[in-house]
Image (cartoon, rainbow over all chains, first blue to last red):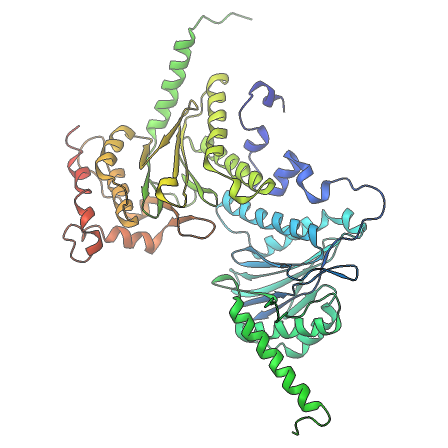
Length: 282
Length: 260
């Protein structure tokens, strides 16, 4: 630090210290107050804050699909009906978040930057395991906040360029990292979404079919969980669905999603009408 | 403690400047050119891993000549500076001018206060929404900043390369033409015929205006081969009707070397 005084005007020593390719480590040394886990928390109850809910991810042929509903709740109130909870972490991975929305969005921003920072400094991408471990470290830094009820639980999925397949990683609030096979879901509606995924997921699903399965799982979760929002056809707000394959991260477009949501709704309408007494005969 | 001999400030600064200039002139040159859809950077560099041209932020790139350890250190500092700024404000609030200022302060402070100046010369360039809003800053070892338009050459034989670029460059070049001009100019030798640089000896990168977020892209392998392979067929212009006009401006660099 002494150097900063003798050499006024130049970039501080922290900027030119060699060795670290991590933006989080740089922040921890230079501006620790910008890190989510490093802020002192005042005593007392944490007031109600928006909570993000259900995320599902499933492996498909040559990649993964991740989807999230659009609802954030604050107690029994709906805080937002168009929040986005699935983000590109970099070109070949996606991260979805459940938990305290404000902290989760900040965490995603920092994670995206962490991956990009490493890529720029080192000139190569981190391995998928490296990315997953990095996220675990960042969740661990949030443990103090989690104990105050401000937990963030992400779901991470990406295309492993070395192995040529899609992989999914889940986390707990203490930073535990677990690789999931086939499919996984997190958030308040995850129990219902998981049941749905178990019945609908098949090995070797192609990306289009996997998008449909993801939407079905979210619709099932919204059916039984008040904190998960279903597709909103009057406002044309559809779930955020992304595919990650060897060609990279791609968010499924608005029109494409409209068609999938309509197909799912149409099928359910038909089946419901068939099952109703006095409805159409079989 | 013995008293050092008196050295006048003029002499001290001149010695340091000479020292830095000598170090910089030893290295291979880097050329930077604006073209219609962005900015192209090129240098002779057989290494695939130790770069002289790199990405700093979404629309900003960095090119350097001189001592590798010194400019690598500045590059990392630039990435940290830009990422910190973008994280605390917003991505659109990171610009080349701020970064150039930070570099200028650092270079200037080292030049005046430390016993050895940094033997580097840098270009910080930002691609804008139109060619008029592109920004190219050239920074010298002593912290002086120049706002350049069109083209820059730095490193070994920079003066001669600049005169050649002045003849060859015009506004609204296409990417392939700009790369060919750059490669032709980089082949200049102190004496004798210019060399033909193969793609394997080149490091070429562009900031592309049309790319949505991160504008930086390296031109390697087949993409670069295709651009360079098109060069010999260019004078007859039969296969490349769009490139017919620029065939003439590329001629002066070929004629230039014998004159000086």
